[in-house]
Image (cartoon, rainbow, N blue to C red; front, side, top):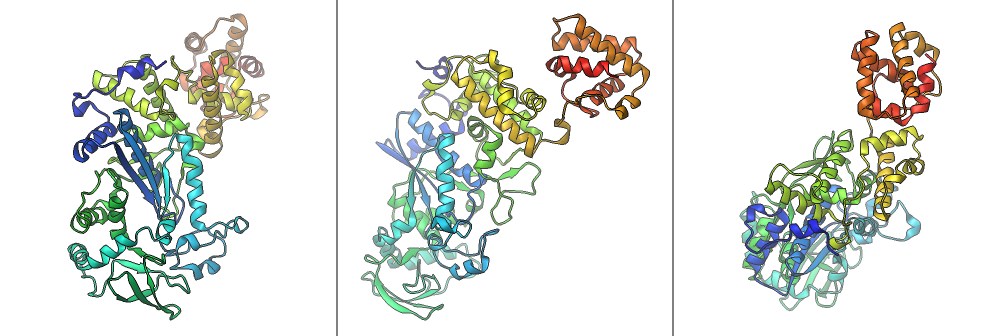
Length: 547
């Protein structure tokens, strides 16, 4: 049975574009520009020369969200992800063991560069980075078809395309020179060659006989050779030609690109010209995505700067559905920050609000926003089959409250889960609570500001007791008395009682709350006092009576 909320947001053919989510708008544009096809190909990819960070992930999730929108319109979609692992190792990766050893692999394909951080695995540095992505993205509902470019080139799959590019060399030079300060050399070639002896790309092509045979000389080892590009995979197209070539080879209908590729004269600009003028094909529909910052960081995330956060680290703090929600709820061309500080609490609150809107438990500010929030929530679902979502709204444990419960239970997530047992309706609720509890523990351990952390005192220290005034001690004992006298307190009623006690003891708000927090957690500030006191009622009574 499908969820009722899902039925309300089914896309209509005549729905105005400005009411659609950006992924739906892009899907409609693809169909409009590429025509009604049996299958659409969407693409993404990267060179695995370093950690594939959360900024790179923005391209993957952008492509996946558009693929979902296409499928929502009843279209078949092929989602390909290319590993450009036949690119060269340009510099020794940061923090890799044995940097001197790795220097001898410079200018070789990264697929041939060993992973010195785990030599026993026998895997390449490229494969290590590839597997890290391939193992984690299914957790957020992404399962593309992976293409390994070293296999494609070494199997000579692109021989015909390389031959054509070489024959069209002057046309490519003319296109690239339009956006260069210094023109390319007259003998420039659109392909590079890996030496058959030392495997480096420090070669110079000395001849191409227009019958698929390349001759070269290596500057590193002096080796000279000729080979047929249809039989040996030593050659590859250079980046600005390789990208548009693959658009044509894979019949790509859509591929996003980063802000750095989207400038006038950038790789996307020249690629669009090359595929038109060299291969007589149209470029894919394009969507630029902006950079992502780490909250409190110095700028965009990049492997070269060393400021890298990957999907594994984000999933330590945010549930898989929330990770999707972060990206689905932000237009790709808008820069945003991944927050690991106190803003994480606000993000959990915003996600829960989006979920309440989807299930009709809360209203958005207007109908357009209501429709948008419902669509964002649908795209946030890890399982594309929305019928698998619960029929009724799942239990929403407040992240802030969950953190307090975990702190009260000595950072024990399992013990804390039992606190919510009566609120859990089904397995979905249990799994969510378990996931959110683990995220809360991770956040408290790694990122939470000091004011969010506390330890409940076993007894009132003499130092704390001696700092309290007579009025403060009397007020705290009054709290203990009213807690023992009545059993029907809730946090709202108890909060009101605090003000009565303050007035009776002629205390101002600051001195009253400071005294309570000092006695309970040895801090001047803490979680909302009334709710907190009720959660640790017996221990609070004991501590307040000790003053």
